[in-house]
Image 1 (cartoon, rainbow, N blue to C red):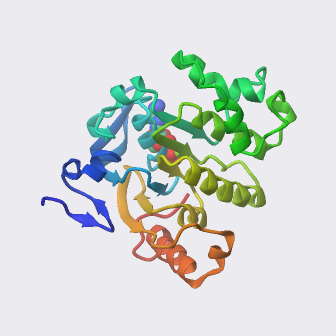
Image 2 (image 1 turned 45 degrees about the vertical axis):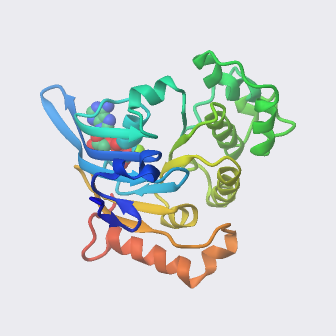
Length: 278
Ligand code: ADP
Ligand code: MG
C-alpha cells in the first residue's frame, strides 16, 4: 500500500484508503496571492489528511496561511495548485451540498436578527427549510435556551460564539471549519467554551479543522495537531494526540497532557523549531 503514515496521518496517495477518502485530503496545496505587481506565496505544497469525524488543529505563527487553508476548503479561495478533496468530493461539490459549517473568530452575527434567525441564516441562504425542532435543538445544545429572541448586542462574547457554533451546525455539516472561534474571549470563558465544544462535537460528530493559537487548547481538543512553519506556510510536523476520550478539564493537569504541550512548543519555538511566533 502506497501510504506513508506519520502518526496515523497519510502523506501520500491517501485517497486510496476509505477512511481518508471520507475525511479531508489535501495534496500539494499551494496558494500565491497577487497584490498589484507583488505576489505573496501564502502556502507551499501543503499535504494534510484527516480521518472522517476526527478533530484536527492547525497551529503556527501569524501569517503562515492557516486561514487560507480553511478558506480554500470552504471554497472561498481557489488554490493556485494542488487539490482539496473532502469526503471524496472537490470544493465545488462540497459547497453545492452545503456540507460545511464555518465559525470564525469574529462571530459575524447579523445585529438586527435574533438568535434563532441568525442560526437559521445559512439554511435560508441555501434555500433549505429547517426540519421541525432543528433550530430549537441547536439552541438547547449550545446552552442558549431562553435567549431565542435576543439580539447579538444583548449577549456576552461567549454567548455570541455559542450562536456562531449553533449557526455552523445548522446545515448539519459533515465538515466543521473553525478559525480561532474563541480567540476574542477571555481565558476562563475560552476554557469553558472548549469543554462545551468537545461535548457538542461528541454529540454531533463532524470532521473538524480548527485554527488556534492555543497549544493547550489544541492538545485538549484534537486527535491530531498539525504545526505549520512561517510563510510560505508548510506543515512542519504532525502530532497525534493519544489521550483518552471523553476528555475532562482535569486532563489538563496530567503529565501526559503537559508532555504534549512541551513537545508542540518545542516544534513551534524550540532551538530546532520550525518557526518563531510574531
Ligand atoms: P494566518 O491565518 O496563518 O495568520 P493567512 O492565511 O490569513 O495567515 O495569510 C497568509 C498570508 O497570505 C499572509 O501573508 C497574508 O497577508 C496573505 N493573504 C491572505 N489573504 C490574502 C489576500 N486575499 N490577498 C493578499 N494576501 C493575502
Ligand atoms: Mg488567520
